Amino acid sequence: MGPDQKAAVIFNATFVRPEKFYIGGFSNMPDVKYFFVFLCFVYIVTVLGNVLLLSVIYQVKTLHTPKYMIVCNLAFTDLCESTALLPKVLDTFLFNRRYIVYEACLSYMFFVYFLASMQSWTLVIMAYDRLIAICFPLRYHSLVTKQSVSVLLLCSWVFLSSLLIYIIKLFDGLSFCRSLVIPDFFCEYAATFHLACNDISLNVIMLFVVSVLLMCLPLIFIAVTYVCIAIALIRIASAQERLKAMKTCTSHLILVAIFFLPITGATIASVVPYLEVNGILTNCLTLIVPAFLNPIVYSLKTEEVLSSIKKLLLKNKC
Image 1 (spheres, rainbow, N blue to C red):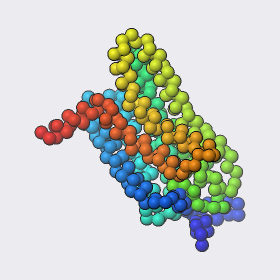
Image 2: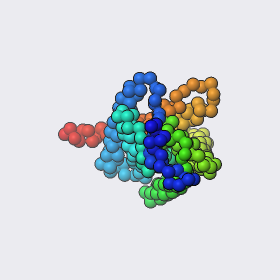
Image 3: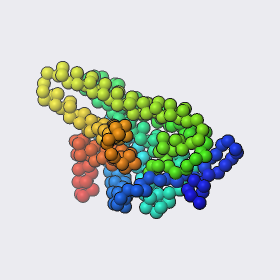
Image 4: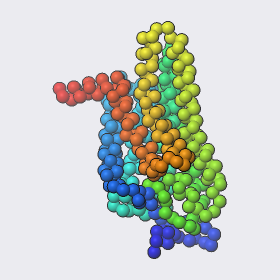
């Protein structure tokens, strides 16, 4: 009996809800165990890096500012997304536990996409912080307050979680009477709903809407923000002041590049037929690399964080 027969549960003649799905990713990838060793390393560094960043911001009172509230939110979502994704991936493939219960698959899907989209919108809020700091420096402390940042972050959490819950509810209405083998490394939304045997047009439309809301719009907002920042920097007479203002944006620009460039590259690779890339491997790296590199970038490229880490180390040494 194959994966499809084992996993199917029939409720009536027209609706089939599977008991389990079968994760079929990485089946033909050579030397895949080395990749899983790499994933273990990435997960350990991701956890240590983000916990270190969170603990430094918590312990150093000078970092208790609106800007570092946003950084905390990013570090927390990075930590949660990696924990939602990587341990299950390692358990699935290292121990060959490829069957996943239907309800667990939906939860898995929700948390991975919700936390990834939260990363995207946190970068938008960071861009807003930089915009106000450079374009309206005299009004920065009145516009960017702990209360205003809390409202922005809370609205992002509520809106994105509500949107993803709706998407998952749509998925829950699908019937699966064909293959139950997911051709990916986790319960990827598009790969999974394409297995359904009833009408998936609404799911396709919502996938497009979600892609625009969670990926395209944030990138557009960030681009517009930096156009405004560039115009403001041109107006600054002193080259030294211009350079100083640009340095405050360096970390954020690197984080934006780390998050959006892999997604853009994966999208182009999937559309262009003559680019032979492993789509599953590309998707995996797209999800795990930002959470892995973000705390490293913020710890090494932000003088306030780096000096705070040094002070804490000296304090503990003494």
